[in-house]
Length: 70
Image 1 (cartoon, rainbow, N blue to C red):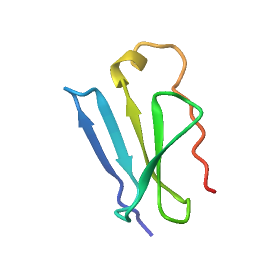
Image 2 (image 1 turned 90 degrees about the vertical axis):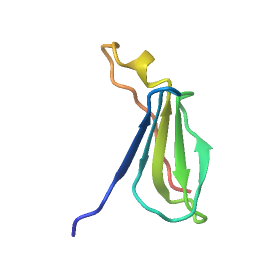
Image 3 (image 1 turned 120 degrees about the horizontal axis):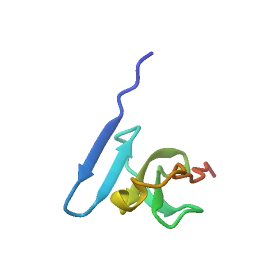
C-alpha cells in the first residue's frame, strides 16, 4: 500500500517540514536542537521539521535525530 508524504520548504525561514499524515498533532523536541517531531494525540510520529536547513547542507555528516513514539 502506498503512502503519501507531504514536504514543504520555506526558503525565507530556512525551514523544512515533512508530514506522514494529515492527522491533528503537535510539535515536540527531539535530541537534536534543529529537529522537531510532529506527533498525534497518542504520541505516534506523524512528521518532523528541520530548522536552519542550509547550515546543515555542507557538513560531511548526516543530520541525525531520534524520532520516538511514546
